[in-house]
Length: 121
Length: 292
Image (cartoon, rainbow over all chains, first blue to last red; front, top):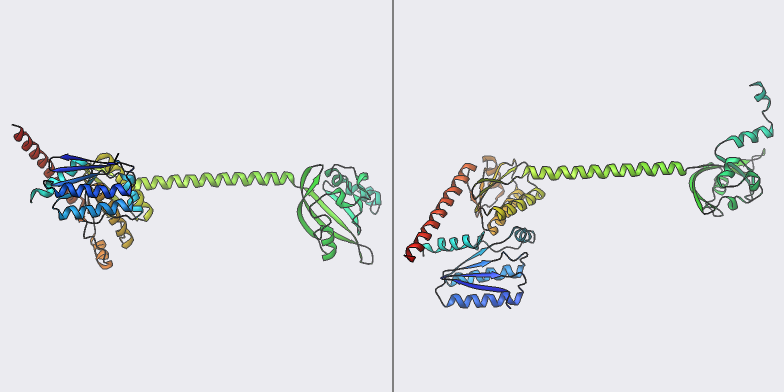
C-alpha cells in the first residue's frame, strides 16, 4: 500500500499524502507524477498535505524540486491544507519551500488558484 | 535583698543559680571529664546531673565533633577565645539540634584548666525557621505563578486576532514586538486561519513604535507562515518614521503586499474576495451550461 493517492479531476491531478510517507515513497511519487504530467493534458497539480502533521526538510526539498520540474512541463502546482502546527514547526526549523511555490487553504481554493493562474495561458 | 547579698560567694548558692538557668551549662577539665553540669543540661540528654559527673563529655553528648580536632572545648582552649556554633546531639536515637558556646576556664595563675560550655536546644526554633522558609517559598511560588499568569494574559490581550470581514483577519500589533510575542502572535494567527479558512490577513503595525531588523524579520517570518497556510498577508500601517528606518536599515519587504492604511488593506482584500466570488460563479455557470 503506497502512502499517497493520485486522483484525476479532468485536467487537474489531486495528490493526497498520508502521514506515514517515507523518503523512498516521496521519490516514487515525484516519478509517477512527472510521468503522468508528461503524457499531457494536465493543467495543474494539487498536493494536499492536510494529513501530515510534520514536514521534514527532505519532503520540503522534494516538493520544491517537483514544482520546478512541473513548471518546465507547463503545469502549475499548488500546495494545500498545511496545518498551523506544521507551519509553526516549519518556521521553527527554518525550513523553506522557496519563494515561488503557491499555497492554498484547502483543495477548493487550490483549484481556484490553478484556474486563475492558467487563465491567461 | 539583704539576705540575697549575704549569699554572695556561697558555693551552694552559686550552684543553685546555675541549676536555675533554663539552658545547659557544664564545665570539663583538660581530660574531658564533666566536673559541673546543671539540671537543664543533664535533662536535655535525658539524664540527671548526678549521672553525668565524672563521665567523659563525649559519652554524654554524642555530637559529630566529639573527639575530633573540631571539639568545641579543644578549639576554645587552643584559640583561647569563645567558640560558638551549632551541632546535633545524638541521644537514645533522637537527634537534638543545639547551639553552643565554649570558653576556656583559667585558674588564678591564668593557666587554662578546663572549659565551660553553654548550650540551648534549638529544635523549636529550627522548626519555626523551617515553617517560615516553607511559607516564604510557597508565597514566592504563588507570586511567580501569578506573574506568569498575568504575562500570559497580557500576551493574549496584546495580540488579538480579529475577524474584520468574512474571510479577512486582522492582526493589529501594538507595542514592542519581541521574539516571544511575535511567536505567540504568529501561532494564534495560524490557528485562527486554520479555523476560519480566511484567504486574507491584514497585519497592522500602526502601534509598533520601533521597527528594526529583528522586528522586520519577525514580520517577514509571519507573512511567510501565512503564505504557507495558503492565505495572503497584507502589511499595513507603516508610518513615515518606520518607513525611513526600514529603508535606512535596508529591510527588504519586496515579497510582501504592503498597503498604507488598514482601510486600504481591507479594501484590497474585499475587492479580491469579490473577484474570487465572481470567478466561482462564472465557473459554476460554465459547468451548468456545459451540462445543458
